[in-house]
Length: 243
Image 1 (cartoon, helix red, strand yellow):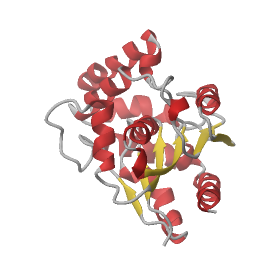
Image 2 (cartoon, rainbow, N blue to C red; image 1 turned 180 degrees about the horizontal axis):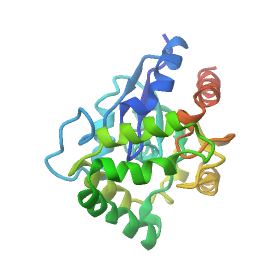
Image 3 (cartoon, rainbow, N blue to C red; image 1 turned 135 degrees about the horizontal axis):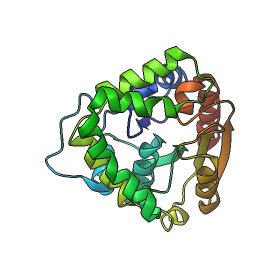
Image 4 (cartoon, helix red, strand yellow; image 1 turned 60 degrees about the horizontal axis):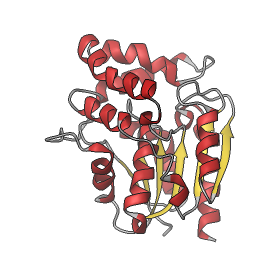
């Protein structure tokens, strides 16, 4: 049996965001866990804001042995903190369409904190309808857009989303990345306009043992828009790590 895999979704996602990965990774011999983050979908609401370290600790409780940890966007930021604070549990990292944290700039932190009020004002359905289409490339088929929007509307709620946004607003991992002594794959859709290829390039450059891969013709949720290509890249990386 190959090493287990933990899948951490983005701030507008849920476990179902990895429907295109779970079976492919299991077929390659990896036990797979895809979580609903605390306060999302089927997971209960946290009693208080977890902060990034709290989310990392919650993820750590799902790992019984060193695992490959795959994080998309916000999930990648949680994965970074998990590797920094619980290094014995992380065999490798995959940071997909991720970021160093919204706290890297005042504008980024302010924009992230404003999201909770936007969700409260609009409600989950209208919020998802506004934000979901931004996560895919302009050429994405309508059925994918519908899936992304529907999953977001069903997954997000207050206070969970507000807590997640606050964790992003207070985080800047610029000085953390260089201390991570493990294999890291940085993956990004070449049409990502949310975090973008430049941010992934900066993450990869800051890591001591990382490689960067572009997923062609994919937006911010590259794993959902181009699952076959994403899976090939990630599974090849897992195989290299275990040689």
